[in-house]
Length: 72
Image (cartoon, rainbow, N blue to C red; front, side):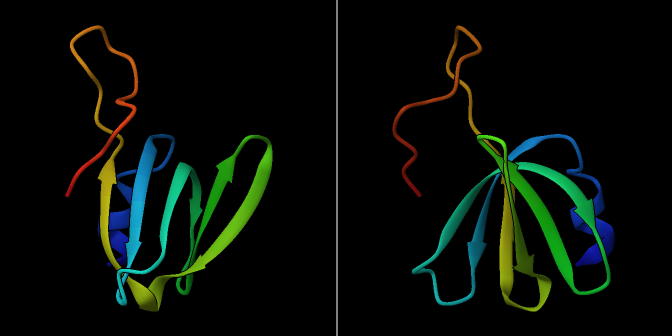
């Protein structure tokens, strides 16, 4: 998972945890052996990589802006 998460460094992403009750979004700054460092609105947050099941880029609309509603 670490190698896959490293592909998203510098991109605005949505990160889902294994229990699906937690969803994080922000720009991935760094990926280490055990965590992902995410920045959102100037704040940093560390997410345990063991609990991550899905990472995807934030979807954009036709104009290139972030979609206001993301349905999965």
